[in-house]
Length: 404
Image (cartoon, rainbow, N blue to C red):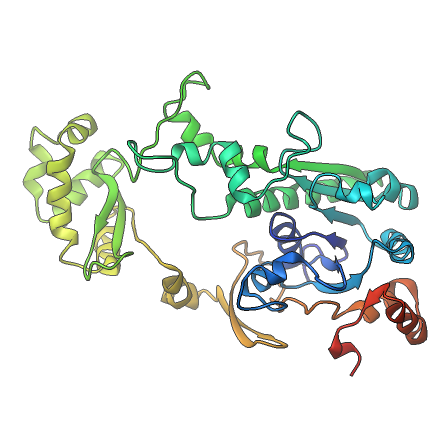
């Protein structure tokens, strides 16, 4: 049993903002059919220089989907898509401004053939306003949403955050909106248009940063680096590699006192230089040296464990290799090995939301056109000969695995 079992999604997404949305819904049990151009497929397939069809980028964002390759620039290809639309609850796209309009596949066109369709789209700046025609990728959305402005050292330039919050953060928010629209449709029988701006989506992740020093938008919130309070900061650990650090957060009086005890400097509790958070910030360098003298004698995992054992929230700085080898994540089954048709067994990160009554195993991302004949037969009752004719005239593409 899966939470979204029965929901069918026609996925015309590319890169990440759209693909992360439909993957999230697929991981919750929705059936997702991805429509791709026959020759190139989703451009995310070739984003990495060392691979084409099976790039790690594409595989990470397209598990649990089926791929259908249709040439939508051909009239017959567009007609195929329009015939497929009534078979689905949701249509999702994140093409650049004006692309679906050029294909004549906008909301009104699809609504005409499927009046109760949920039509969802994510654009860099939405579909209205002065920036509506601007193209956008993750970094642009993060810049426009304010994320770069609060990231980096106070005396340095704005810094791009590492996670792709502009893309995947938008995708997950769109997935939530689609789920809400689907629940509403189950109650009312009516579909609707769902639109999301990546710029606006980034501001969702900005609210704490805005609240610290912005005064309701009247001031510019500052960059704070790794923190201005030495009791809430990043510290080096042995063997002093690029990611050998621990981040600790002694937020309360109890945590501050526990920190002093665990680093075997109990006398710092009553030291007049460090009594209050303001005192600690004022004497930041001296306190950071006291704490780092302790962390430098430990690995980041050791420091993380010892701090948490006394009630001080802390985490090692996990690098990308640490995530895949972490015993905690492995024990929880978050790292899963999946068999891919061309890559063989590959490790994939799981879906963080766990539903006790919904179980959806992770499946590898599809090869381009891997399910073209399968889906066209299911949705449109096309015969093998009809599908072969469509391939011959270039309307669709079948993957080699479908022809053997």
